[in-house]
Amino acid sequence: MPQSPRPTACLALADGTVFYGKGFGATGLVTAELVFNTAMTGYQEIMTDPSYAGQVVTFTFPHIGNVGANPEDDEAADPVAEGLVVKWDPTEPSNWRAAESLAVWLQKRGRIGIGGVDTRRLTRAIRQQGAPHVALAHDPEGNFDLEALVAKARAFKGLVGLDLAKEVTCAQSYRWDEMRWAWPQGYARQESPKHRVVAIDYGAKRNILRSLASVGAEVTVLPATATADDVLALNPDGVFLSNGPGDPAATGQYAVPMIREVLDRTDLPLFGICLGHQMLALALGAKTVKMNHGHHGANHPVKDIETGKVEITSMNHGFTVDSQTLPVGVKETHVSLFDGSNCGLRLLDRPVFSVQYHPEASPGPQDSAYLFDRFAAAMTERKSQHG
Image (cartoon, rainbow, N blue to C red; front, side):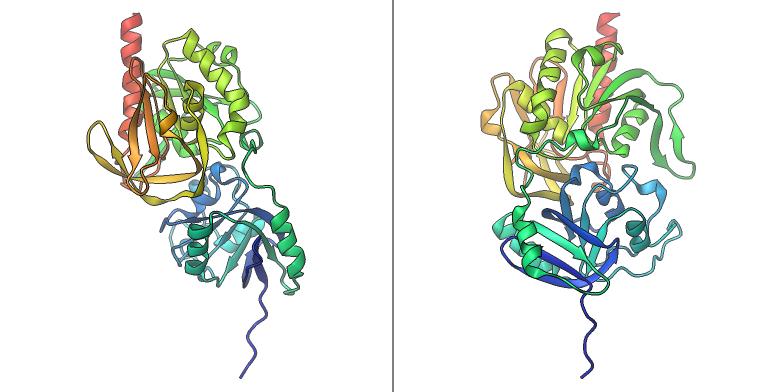
């Protein structure tokens, strides 16, 4: 019998479990938290979503990489996820939009991939034991010190207590006017804005900013550490709190005081997504907790409690708002139909609301787009009231 090729990549879990496979993309070693994502499409968007900072992503769908990569699908300037794990080695791309293969795209951007892994077994382990700490190594020669890799996985401190928003936020403020992609023109520009929106960047995806521009917003993006004075100096019609990575309690050390001050000093509409949802919840007096394995995928059913409507949503979060800690005057608006966890809230007496999932994504495909329209309508109504 011919000998099988020597593995060129290795995934070591903190419990000592080791998975071998074929490496692609960059070489080297990273340590991170391991999560699984159930989406069948959008791997490039997932890898560039800043919410995945500090994480390696296992894809449950086996055929990852078959449409290649292209500049239009990036949600950030570079990949933020530390690496990816797939069932089958990526094939050569077969799509008219492909500019390069996934392997080349990863290699240029310093991210490691491993193929040939039993992702079903790996996903079961994550579900049963929680998101593990791992070390992912790619060596074309196949030389791995397993004890050292397991030790590195065990030494990873994890995401609890870690503020990653500061690492992925913008360095300085900027304007955004690009709208959502549409056939056949692609990305158009918002040339007749109706509202001024200040977006706080805890790790904002580009398509969220496009969605704001598409409902008539002139968007000014501010760094995560912006103060209430920074926000209000721009005289906005509304404030947006973006998605992002890490422990919300850690980011909340500086984000919560800013949000509370904005709420105390103004009656501005405020809209939050993902980490922004958690920041708003903390500012209102609720608490957040670490989940066992989190929600990561594009097939998550969420129920709108107020209308009874069920939305198919995209999610990416490892922490959740504890709905039992929501104070008086704050209503839970959405819940996950997978586990009943909180997925939305709003103030009863003013247009301040947020959701845990990603309405800018398109798994439904447009089930949740109404939230951006609701934000725009709230800004219009406030301006009419204030003359």
